[in-house]
Image (cartoon, rainbow, N blue to C red):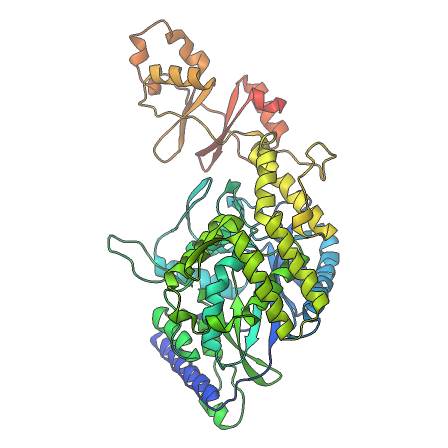
Length: 618
């Protein structure tokens, strides 16, 4: 879709014209397959590297278009979030030292981007979800100002006709109503492509589905979102919900999400996979069409199947079938979309080699896997891997086995065989697959983030902890060693950057609050139980109505009858408040000027935190 000038489907004529070309493309694809026009014996790999932009505070920096212009290289393109960019690598033939060549190509382009970024005080970070992202970074104002993203956002919102209801439960829980698809911009991937022969393509696609869970379990790198510890690979849950066109109702919703693992094995032809998506999901974007694909084939020309590619670009299975044209020859490939960006380029190439090796090393016993395994076991494996990472237990070939044992005893040997089968050099195979082994027996990206985040929270508030975590991740990433050898953050060493401290760094967000109808007696007891001296008064919408302090209630301690009075009679309504990004010195002066002991922190009059005098000593 990124290569096309798109617009929204509006009129009946536009829709009819798009459907005409879409169906024509399907017919053309069938013809190319029947006439053996699809490239048959070439195996290739390719990848798309998404990455994040941060400033010197290690917070998101929304300057993607500005940076893209200065990089001035067609290998780079935009993403939906204005703090992300994407690098498209050149495809390589799958043989010999192709993985180390791809690695060198990846590093070379990233170095080019980093040099340009450094001139603007921007740093580049590889991570599945940037830990320092906040809810303030995912509004429509942070969307990249490119028409196709605006059209996509408008079309999906129009279909939903309601906010996106995000609910993800992990160690913590995220409950959020959001008004755009910008939450998708939190996700940053290393998308891997494997070109395969049309022969046995569907069976190989099913194999890709079968191995997705175990492969993902070794590659997780996205456990944190908005400071909350969720899934080992939170991207899987977030992407599914953030671009969902379905609307909940009182009726059972059997429709499939546009982001999906699928609902069953593929059992037909290659075009049946595309037909299934066309049948399930309506198009809402179009482009300019000039040629008829079937006519082009009759003229011995290779069509680009623009309508089919555009529709395919708005459907997001975790393993997606893609059609392309390279050097004038049409080809088919599987796009692996579930692997996160980072923690290092070495880790990413190792992830890719692991996946490709297992794809190429499929044992003969697993041919026609769809006749042997229950698809729901495979789907369960995938989502369990996203939740638990390397701690997952899989249903594999009819037996339960830990991720650790499955990878070390079955999948890594299988990957070696597959790689040697297609001529990968032993030097490359051993170098990159050792990274996978070390990660499985040591520590993964998601485990490193979680362990260090928990340690930082013992001495820092959440906002500062995620900045420090992001800064250390960047430093270790720049050193280039795989995540399995990173080790714990030394929290007592010299800080990596000077924090510009704002209220968000010191405020408490886990606040005990009361309703104006609550009794003063209840307030007194809560303050005693929790050893607190200030309690905000809010309504059902979390809007701040007033403030009550220990000074306000202590005169009631010996007056049992008056304790029955409600909070509304006692609370202070003339309240001094601050916003979360108010400088700490400004907040401190406000408290001194007004001789008050606490400051509620609000956003659009919604209470989000509280600062007291004690917080300034932190």
